[in-house]
Amino acid sequence: MGLGSIAQSRRVEETSTEQLSRNRGAVTVRLAKTAYEGTLVTDCVAGKAGTPVRLRQGNDVWGVSLADALAGKKDGSKVIHPSVAGDVIVFEAGYLDRDELVVGRIAGRTHDGIQGHAQVMKVLARASYTSVSKRGITQYACLADPAAAKAVRTHDDVAAMVVEHKLRAFPGGDVSFLLRCRDRQEEFRFDPGEKPDAFVRRLVETNGIVAKGPVELMPLFHMPMGREQSLREGLDPRVETAGKSMGRLSKLYSTGRGAGFMPSIAIICDEDEWAFGGKTGKRVRVAACLDPLEIGSPVNTFKIPSAFMRDAKGALMTPYQSRELWRPDELEAMSADRRTRFTPEPQATRVKPAYLQDGPAPRRSPPPRMPPPGMR
Image (cartoon, rainbow, N blue to C red; front, side, top):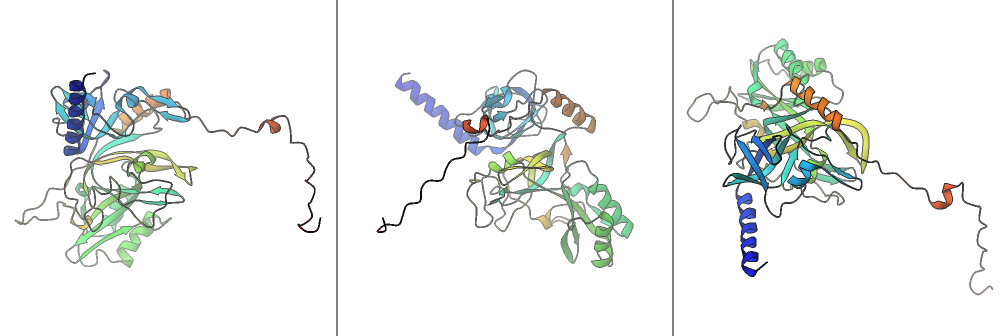
């Protein structure tokens, strides 16, 4: 390669890296049967949802490459499960280059390694700060549904709303309720092991939330980040933090005084729970992927717009509409299809030393005791 070609290659690489950094914001693509082709799931710099695109990954991109994500890869005990036609890949950034969509790092994806249902959601979300302890990396996602906010007036109104969102298939996780009225703003969460009936009594009788008239209740859904998602923070999982820290993702959701909400794309599914370097045997609902649709100013929890709030001109505000990509029957069909292709990850096995493979080690006599110096 001549010097001119090398210089041109470097300019292309720099341009690709710079453009991806300038166009930060989730690009979500549903894969087609033809490799490196798909359709946009949400509006982005490349066009409106439903636009067909051809993919090309930029240079110097970290993480799982697009080629490995499409073909799958095995490297010892590590398995990269393939994403096939119909699956969704979320990229951190992208830009158009002629007839191709140049994409950045993979933020998350659905693939053959996911067991059970995996829903893709366009949602108002918040990413917490991150901490690292002996247990591992800890980070949480909170998904709000302002379009589901209601004005409740009676005990029955509160009970009906609590049961409705407690039983929702997605987002799932732990549900809490944001209360707002003229003189009160508060979030109520379930106590460990608390039943819905007891929770409603605590809200209505103990806290008297409807004693002075109707109040607004909005559901919030809390869940831990998936294992791969937590690693995107860029924190070393082997180094404990003194407290909560901001990583690559949580910085985007920071208001300066805490974490705030932004329109985001999320992949919600169930994963094996990990702690202290191994699996606990439990399955938990997680945000396997969370990424902002565009970089903006995060909104404080108590200022999330809803149909019960008015703007500066006194007009009622339009709440953010969450949207699920797949219907329940589609989720079931995709889950069944993945089960036919699922390849479990190889389990690490401990190899016995050679002297133990044919029975116990022979008994050895202890070494003779030597007298202390000066007494020989």
